[in-house]
Image 1 (cartoon, rainbow, N blue to C red):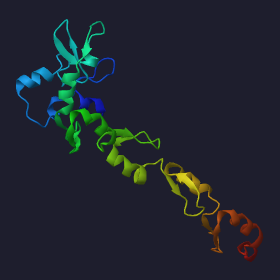
Image 2 (image 1 turned 45 degrees about the horizontal axis):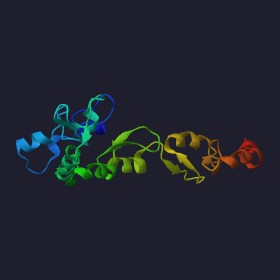
Image 3 (image 1 turned 45 degrees about the vertical axis):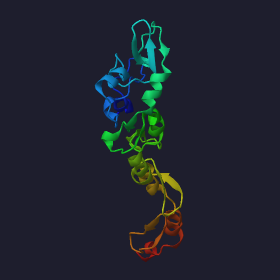
Length: 198
């Protein structure tokens, strides 16, 4: 899932976000007031509001036509930034509420933003689930071999167990001696009495 789909109504062709979703506002605004704060192009709440003297309309900075002369509208931006809103990821479970102007800062720490696992397994999860995944479930996390105390990725541990010199082995053909792999060859060659007794 893309974070952008939750933040705005439209992802512009150049990859920039359009306006904020209108459903994240917590405070009541009249239809007239809302109409003045909505981008005429993406239909979201103005993000970095600009005003075009040519068309007489407000629109998001990223929604303006490249050829269009537009000026930032600080007064409208100030009003929009002061609006009380829920986190754009409320539909995923986030209960954060604050000023719309602080939305980007909140999303930097929001536990419901999707991110890719930093360990390299390529799974994408919300931050709060990703922490548990990396600590307990990721096949790329490192664990310690209980026999040699060296670190290996979970996905490599199976192979390591077939090679680890410290893993205990049992002599299966008679003497039932248990010793680590690195000593077993010497035992079979020098001190195992099973071969002599046969």
